[in-house]
Image (cartoon, rainbow, N blue to C red; front, side, top):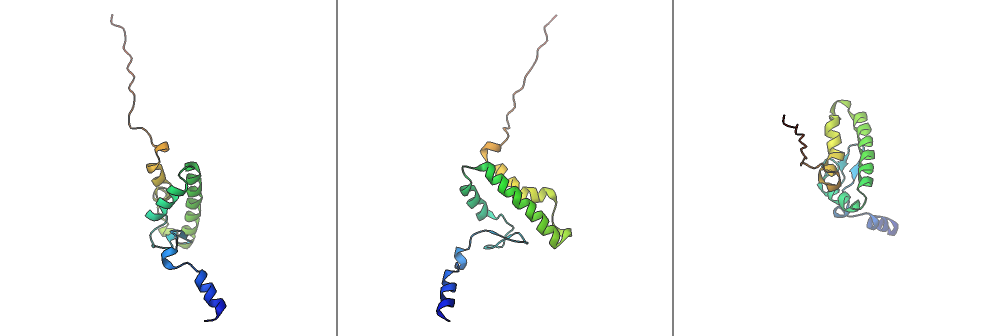
Length: 116
């Protein structure tokens, strides 16, 4: 191996250093092969966007749009339902983000009519 090839090989990340990023157009994780965002990617994204949750939703919405286009182009019959794709990209942060949770408690208002 020549010196330049050795330097190029040394600059490549080792397999253990590969981040959990999407492999397009399949939208599988480059590292673990799971549908992206995989569990590790979700953890990394949650940490990265900890103080910018709206930005996380905007980023994932763009990814959702690209994934639908890519997967439909590859094989329209196996793209998946819109609900499944939405849940895959945008459902998980909505379930885990306290700012976007809907309170399960409701306030009941009763109106009493005067007795006659």
